[in-house]
Image (tube, rainbow, N blue to C red; front, side, top):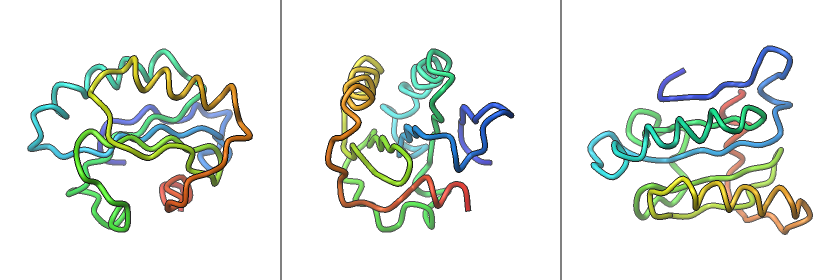
Length: 122
């Protein structure tokens, strides 16, 4: 596994983990490098969510059909449904608030985007 990752505990399979928060970044991006430790800290506060740091250049095949216009780009997915895909300010409070809202409202319509969780668990 490349990149920083808060992987599921042994009692969860990757495919059955449920929630995924992925940060799509690049190593050359200063904002991404500064955000990475905060993203890791956010991961530690949510042990029931799989957090995945994805360098779009190192793992280009994984994200090649996802439009990344700027950094950091966040993907929040529940099972096979992408519920959020977009660029944010590099603040974990924004990611945490978005995740909390989506978890409280699970019937939200999914966004048409690739199933990143399926690709990560393939």
